[in-house]
Length: 334
Image 1 (tube, helix red, strand yellow):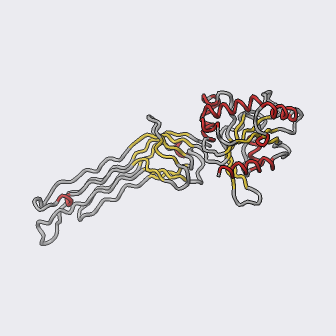
Image 2 (cartoon, helix red, strand yellow):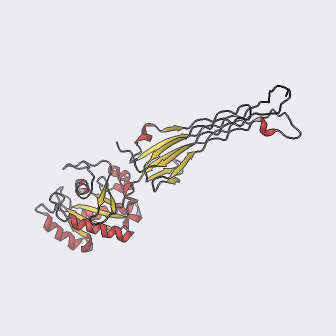
Image 3 (cartoon, one colour):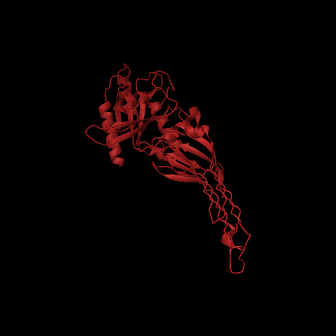
């Protein structure tokens, strides 16, 4: 199950109370104060982990509560600190304040830590209040309450390349052909309902390129039609876009209009996407109408010829050239 948005409640632990205690030893009838401090409350900590790819664990456990600190004891013993709650989240997760929308933390790499709620400080025992004028204080402090807050977590996939296009254009098929991913593939729209990640291994090169297959967009996606916002967020971090077009017009769409709608929806969602380097993969070249449609697309689209790659995911035609084009574009961004 893939989950890319959750709302959680974080509650840090309360600090333990300080202790009032006095020495009670043989031959020391009036021993001094020896009440210890209370332990600190536990923190709620989020940690990014590359082995985690979804926020599903938080969907089923939206309330995170850390342990309370123990109270202080006699003989100057400090209470144990409360147990931290540490939860792993995927890199690419963004933590926001749900009321203001302010970003509290952005996990851009694995191993980053964010303290979502800090535990309360433990209270001081009476030994801490001893002075020259007060040799037997009975004063102590209560532990401080821990922080509590509500937060939203949104996952934006971190990938080098984002595949986007209309439903049934062949994005999942393309991902399965050039990467080691195995997404669900079928000949009907909206087969992909959650993004898929694949790794493109370059021939003669030790480097790899992460590729994200984003569920199909529709006209009005920037207004959240067809879950547009949920899908579009996953290409915000990509450095290169590949627009996959059904050049054979199997679904009856005009390939040129599909391209123009995609470009418009991306720009309306995020202006930065309008200037993102891109290639156009004209898929289904194995079908009869594809060649004529490709010529018309080249003439009318205004896309530079070097950015247009005719391919067929069914036969493998043009895939090597497309991979080389993607590689060169990613290298240029680096």
